[in-house]
Amino acid sequence: MSEIMSLIYTGISELLQFWQSVWQALPGDWSWVLGIVFLVLTVRLALLPLFVRQFRSQRALQRLRPQVQSLQAEHKGDRMAFATAVSALYKREGVSPYAGFLPLILQAPVFLGLFHVLRHLKPSTTDPGTQTLYGWTAEQFHDASHATLLGAPLASSFSSGGTVVMLVSAALIAAMVITTFLTTRMTMAQNGPADDPQQRLVQTLMLYGLPLSLLVSGVIFPIGVVLYWTTQNIFALGQQAWLLRRHPLPAPTPVPAT
Image: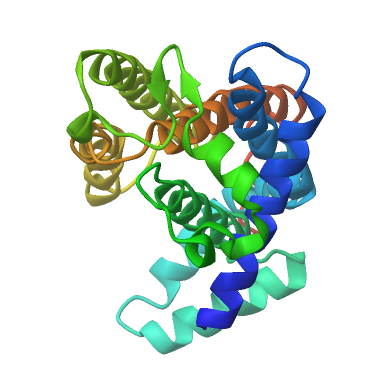
């Protein structure tokens, strides 16, 4: 497992270095800022076919919801028979209820890897062996670890900096929280309203709980990670708006007469 994560850290470092080199001619440290932004765009564009497949699968599940509810009533009290009937329905319709998890599973290592890489880029690190981990040269490590956004080091966090760091970090955390709320709300809109009161409660908790948890945990995130998350949310908002326009909520499939 550690070897796999090491490969992920190296891949993220090399991709970040590539995009930084593309924008190297820009003044100041904007090349590192744009390196993080285009790292997000690269990952999201690579995963776009999976997100489209996920969206279509969700739409198919919504279309089949009346039939699933009918099967639930038919097999009330017999969970095994209900699960078998639903599985047969999905197989017949060519629908996978698990398609929505794949993009999330693939994004998680990237986020964790970027979090680790940015925490690794500490100006206080002077050991050459540590500096050159994950494909960095000593010069690249120095430049990246001292890169700033509006005067705040990308590797610093709200809880570890001075006034400038706290102001920049607070602005990015606020943007991260707001865009997370908007992204979650749009995702719920694309899934349609929940029928079960318990599901509606879970949706409400996610809608407000996730942004609030980020408001708390954002104070320990490096500024670069908060920038990554906010950029990803902005891209996700545009992506979801595009998908909603192309694939509106389908009309439910009527339950076959028995």
